[in-house]
Each structure stands twice: as C-alpha cells, then as structure tokens.
Amino acid sequence: MATKHYLGGCQCGAVSFEANADLDQTVTCNCSRCRRLGSVLTFIARDEFTLKSGEDNLSEYLFNSKKVHHTFCKTCGIQSFSYGEKPDGSAMVAINVNCLEGVNPRELTSYAHDGAAA
Ligand SMILES: [Zn+2]
Image (tube, rainbow, N blue to C red; front, side):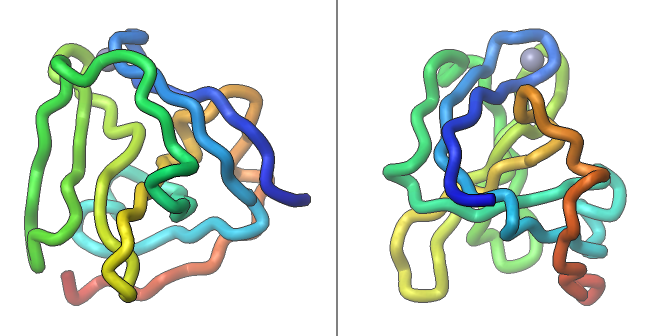
C-alpha cells in the first residue's frame, strides 16, 4: 500500500475531512483513552489533512501531557481525528482510521504502542 486519499468524518456527518495517509503505518495504543475508544491511528502531516466541515461542532479533550488535542463531534461524540505535534515540533494530525470511508481497520496490521502509562 502507499499513500492514498481518504474521506472521513464523525458518525452524524457534521464533521468531515479529507486526508492523505499510508495505512501501512497504523498504530494501536493501550493508553487510558485509546484503550476505551479502540482507536486505530495513523499520523500524518497537518498539510495532508483538510477539515471540510464541522469546525464549529468540535469540542476537545486534553490529558496527560496535554499536547494532543483530542477533538470530537459535539453532536455524536465520535473522535475522528486529533491535532498534535510530531517529535520535531511540526504540526501533525492523528487520524482515527475507524472513521475513514472504505477502510476495515481490523484487516490492517498495526503497531501496538505501549502507552499504558498515560
Ligand atoms: Zn457527529
């Protein structure tokens, strides 16, 4: 697989986005949040992400280091992406692969990040 163009969004449709991502590079995580959400994540540069709708319908949650802005739809509660920074300080978006159209995250081989301390 290689970098492809995807459409994604929340459950109710208020939040929608386009993203270019390589789904050979996905991550699951056992931190206190991802464990509950069942998140399958892929991390992309901010300029590979376009929020098409729902800017005004997003709320956000911060925890632990408070560096990642976990955005979620105010209407349906689904966290389809979050904003953060890469280790080099550049703007990053963590896409919730569960929220991409035409993708079955359970068919992907994801790296299991041990984030349980968070
Ligand atoms: Zn929604």
